[in-house]
Image (cartoon, rainbow, N blue to C red):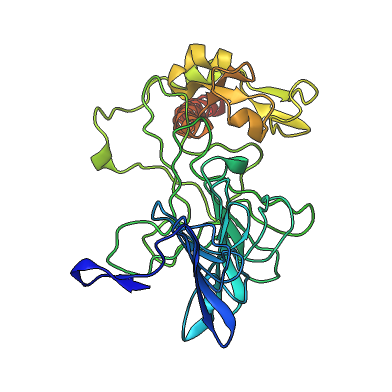
Length: 359
């Protein structure tokens, strides 16, 4: 040790290490290469603390520490030593509070909450677990609940002045913005349940822009549809123009060919067609008489989720014709009125003939 020019205090000018002792025990070392160790006599980084390079400051400026544990996170707080950040494994980052792991981020980009493993929606696993991902398992957000209470994902918008939805789903792909499935094979359940407390609200609302060339639907059901009240259609006079009576409804009615038939369930087992005898019209024939009541669209002949996710240009989607049976009611009503007029006229003629016979 010596004092050099300009007041500098110089310790060790040779190539050896500089060592510091207290109570006859070495506590600190400065190696000849410049590495400093406190409680570490073989520092591998520019500055280390703890035997085995537990805490390091690299010459590049990077700070590194041990993986630590859930009850003693590597980065914690003096007044909350069991809460902080740590690493349970290679390329895994975890968060603990009160000595319990609450969340982790995996190297494959998933963010897990209250879970330590990825969970597929159709499998069992930890309760109240979820993850966010850009690639794995094809889910952007996945929530799974295996407990007897609560759900997988819940969204709530409590601001009555907020015009946005509690939960929104949008896709730019070929499948659904929102997909719902009740998977239990027994018991009552709903694939999708909608309700409203507002007297002017909608339990379920579906919309499709439509148009002359449209092949989509505001609602598409594979199977029967049930209603406890009724089905209503907009019919206000203010919505209409070019209003004229139906002419020759009886003539139209006489041209129709009502049929009885069975759907081909062997050829189309998953299309959702009803079993047993049905009654109706052949759309191709009805179109020649009342083209306004026939619509051309496409149907998924296999009726499966995988096929629905495919483009409608796929071979499983084939063109078909659908009939607007509700619009036949006014024609049938008008035909009945025309027929009633004929009956009244015939009754008058019969009455007159009866009077002549009595004379």
